Image (cartoon, rainbow, N blue to C red; front, top):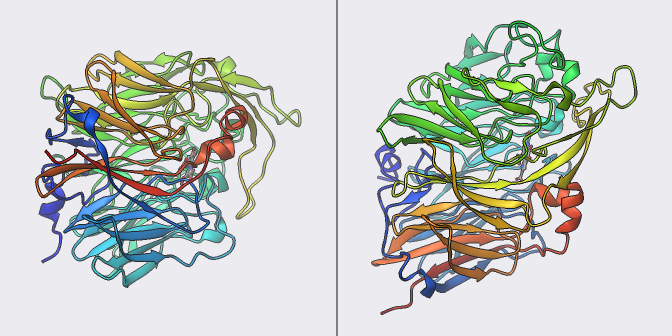
Length: 561
Ligand code: PQQ
């Protein structure tokens, strides 16, 4: 028996289990349960808590999974725990043995696993993907995605479609090449690979398939060979159109002048395809069906990896939505990835005036960091958003109840300048320097309710520290999310009013879930501050350096009647 493709298709509508990241492969993070709702959420209390233990208290960005009476949760440093759903007691634990010299850019985090057949799959920081037996935690297979010594790592939750385990890769700061890989879930054997930078060859069943894009059409010289575009946040799956959607990170290096991206030209020279893009991919073959580039000529580290959520708009049109790191909220057509609309979702965006009718940014050329070739350091600019983005990896949620998206955003900017750089295997390949700064005294974090049909912000909930955790919506009219200050919060989905909160003891950068057990509705979130902000946040990192680390799974329920 085991978990089937049909079970994955039904994941969002079955209340007793959570098999996929995103609570359904379209990543809506909406639960149709309403036992817990606006009227009773103020009574929510802890049912149990579970500590990851050890000294490895780092960013806990995971989303728990639930199957057959067991919760599966990944922790920092490539650990996975199986926990009894009723008692909160540990059943087994798997610790990946990580080699010295792993190179994750942005903390030793993991965002979760995927369940299929009799296995749970998750990726490790040394760029491997592991299949473990659901019952025992025994290793079924363990495969290398890429060479960690070159800067590759892995942090995303894998995606499972039609018996294939589909993974991206991390390493965009090291001049790696972004890629999507599909493996047979039973054996771990590679079925296809799709590099995302033009000029590189894909494979299918061990043989070359097709080239990605057109060689040298949008890159100068050999720059495509180390072109970046890490697919580090994984992907989503739209079953209606049978399409995988993966985002691609910043082109490498950051210094855009080295990639011919600094001077406007005719055609797409310097666009650096398909970095900073979303790709629609055929799950059977790994062929690219369509692409949409959010930031052509990228020069501010606006990775295009943010999750693409499949939904229907209020007129019933099949749409995708994505809130890009570059500060714009995009709506695309699900059939062909074509641009529908884009609206800013953060304040004071400085690098573009807006997005034109073809989905291309209208650049403010003065806001591109200057060319350093003539000097050691190019001209510095103050750009908004900061390179950590109007929104980073933390997933938004869609509500089927309100038709709105709930987007965890941040309002901040950066001083940024370019420097000369040349590629060296396994070394940082940026060619830029930067300092992140707040732009408002009152707040950085802002959870926004966005109407995707008009792009308007209906309400916002402001938070002192940058928001760094996922959002979940429910048919009970609730929006759940956590803050770096440690609060786990439920808001009213129509007004943004705070209905409930609980202090978890460390910052929340995890992704909440909800499920049913014996007729009761439970809510779980993992607490444990970390991720990119303390490491890369400049002045903002200093502002939040009082926050404590942790590693605790918190589970809540209503008291018995
Ligand atoms: N990871 C985080 C985090 O977990 O807090 C934030 C970031 C990453 C970024 O802002 C990145 O740019 C980023 N880039 C890559 C890459 O280019 O390969 C990987 C990751 C990652 O795997 O976590 C992040």
